Amino acid sequence: MACLPDRLMNTHLIIPNHEVQGAIELLLSEGWLSQTLRIHPDESEEFRLVPLDSDAPQNLPPPLDHYPILDTEGKPTQNRRPSWQSVLEKLVGIETVKEYESIWPASHEFIGDMMLLKIEEEVRIYEEQIVKSKMESHPHVRLVLEDRGVKGEFRVRDLRPMALRINGQIKHNPSSDKVVTRVEVRESGHTIICDPTLAYYSSRLQTERIQNVIEAEALREKIGAPIAIADPFCGVGPALAHLINRQHLTSQILASDLNPEAINILNDNLRRWCGRDFLEASKRKLQFKMNIWSGIQDARELPGNPELLGHWNMLIINLPHLFSEFLPLLLPLMDATKPYVIRGRLVCRHDEIEDKHEQLLQQMPSPNAKVILDPRRDYSPITSLCSVTIRNP
Image 1 (cartoon, rainbow, N blue to C red):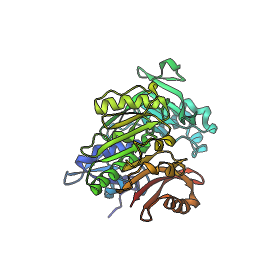
Image 2: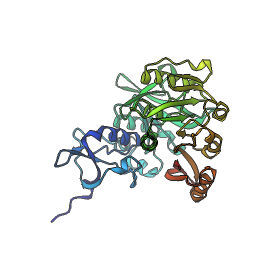
Image 3: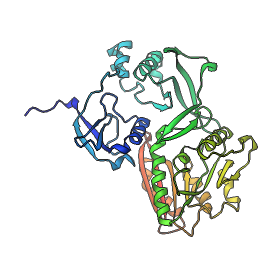
Image 4: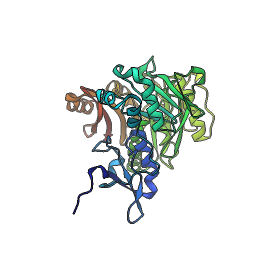
């Protein structure tokens, strides 16, 4: 029997019909959904076969790792759009594409109808061709921004507008008065207002946010009651969007940040999610209203508030470079009379992951604490960005 051509064989996730939309949002946010193959039902029509992109990791993070994997013949999309690489070949020539094969910006991030990408200096002379190829391949993209890292006290992304789609036409290097960066994004059915030029937000952390929910629901079951969740580096609140309106999950929420712009947008989100008014960040005061603490606050000062001490069942520390520094400072917030969970991310050297694991264990007051340090991807040639889960006890 003849073998199927390799190009037609593709890895698919087998996903129940009622869970497909959430999984698609996750895969899109990570850039792991195939752009050339379509989603189709299995023989029972109770599941969908969701094709993965060739860049998707072999070991998917939670909750995607719960779905069975099937290598099967892919079904090409109808009315298939050209890949950005094929458009680029037409614009600069195949020889140029091959010359800089490892340097072209293969990855990008979507935030609403915006695309963020990084460009190496070696190919900057082809900036307009790169942007045109990306926008032709992704017709929903309104604005392309160059991601130049982070800047300032609040580590906000340094973003430069590269191209704007106006009435179907692509305008390169648009004037700032034409550029709107405040957008709404959808995550697992939740709408989040964000502006990455004012407050840090990454769609690629959606898998981490869903894992927070998994841990929170397991903790609620263990405690037998709704839990109090603290997010002292909350930004515009994307982690809370997944937690705040889940029935019987939370008893109280702490949502604070040092960035006034982040808190202003957070308050807009809280009004939408909770239907309540919150003070503008210009009040510069942590406030308590309807079981939610929110406002501008240095996380180092939180343990100085007696109303917050020993109160929280779950803590989120989304500060990868300073996780280890803040962990012991914030432990007094936790309710040590019950099990509690700490979630976050940290950056450490590849060869120091075991040492970091031991260090985190030593920082925990209980000898029965469990630390899970899961390297998710390379942060640099010598460091890993790790997902952290600490369960006590």
